[in-house]
Length: 619
Image: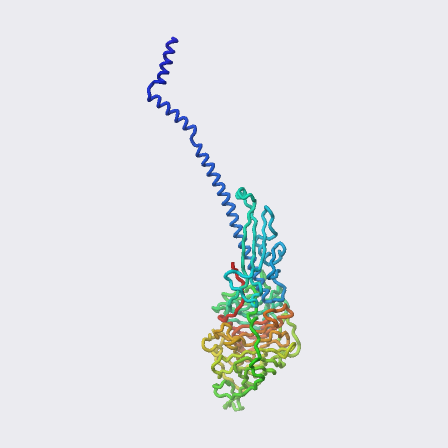
């Protein structure tokens, strides 16, 4: 039995070692399959771990980079806003060199927000999330600094007279941002993001609205009584009041100290602007923010206009225009006389010899350009002016100009004027003179310190005597000869009464040099701070002024001292019942008072350009 078992074992052994080859291969293959199942997936796991680590790193870096990108955009927006805020204040400072800087910084002196947090750039940076307190090691923080580069690549630097010695501003923001995954690689928990903005003042040609220059006065623009000022045409902004006064920079009443309104339509801009569909009234000070502008019954901006407050000031566009010289001018040229000859010789005046059925010619007084040591006084006569510069030194008494309730103190008694047009006085350009634009420029210098004069037009002017007649003047005469542009729609076809027209060409003509528009008509000596020698025009029987009316007190222009040292000029413009006052041009003055009981029509030249500076984001 034992041998039998042994024999079986041997048989099995033999089978195992010498048995069927097929069976042996099968068993070997089964073992190989068993080993393969035990080792499968090991490489895949390592690959998955490696790929997962890479993806986690990619996501981590992506999150950090996305966060840094958003911080970069935020920092750039803050830098742009801070830079523009500073540049706007630099523009404001340009219109009043002696005033306290608006922005809380001095152009040319670099600063940072850690030490100048109240400055305008720092306040705007803070509003956008960047306090500029300074950089802290290893912690989220930021730094905001401002500097004044001498130049900006690709940008032409404006003249010092236009924009000051430091017209460019640069704001740098460094934002120290917390990072996470990238900190494992860099060894630092933060990374700095930088943003740079460059902006400043650049030269520009622009249309000029009516500009009221006083930078601090309470309502230097005033419409009193039952007067209405109606603007036709011109640029998108018809009126700009530069005063920063926060009580009321512009008012439609002559009483009290607030922004109260009259019961009538005082400011009518519904036909203003380049398309005659409405224009803007801009004011730098109050009412601003949540304070409401005058009611629609008082202020009508049309469909495309609005009340803009705060609106950036517009510097004096004529601050670099020199006063005329007396060289080459005749001294006290004597007037001559012309008798009416059917209107062909320039004299439009006919008078009656008490026989209504028979009119006999009248006599016009002809004036010539020159230096006048005595005032020119027109009363009960018709005066015609040959073209040229009238440099008037003499002064004569007349009704005083009224400054309203603004910042200039009214005086008693009479005023002083270099040109007066009184009862039954009429003035006209000499239409018989050919080969020129018939333009006159009146410069009022007065007799010296403390005794200045300007222009006065009385309420009784503009009409001839009871039995006298005067030819109407075609409104086409307002057009400059040759390439001149016709008045658009403000003027009637013909005009009776007083007419004065500025030059189209020359130093005081169209500033573009093309001779298309009337230039400077009235130019007060910038040293005139005499409150008894300011311009007053009361309309009379009719008044048409073609050109710029410039009344600004700033002896050292373009550098002006702060009020009350400078900015003491004002312009009193009134309309009388039954009369019509037209101003075809621009008004630049420190204080504008519109009063009376009639509509004063002003048509601005929308295409007349002057050189000014504006704020621009440069880089």
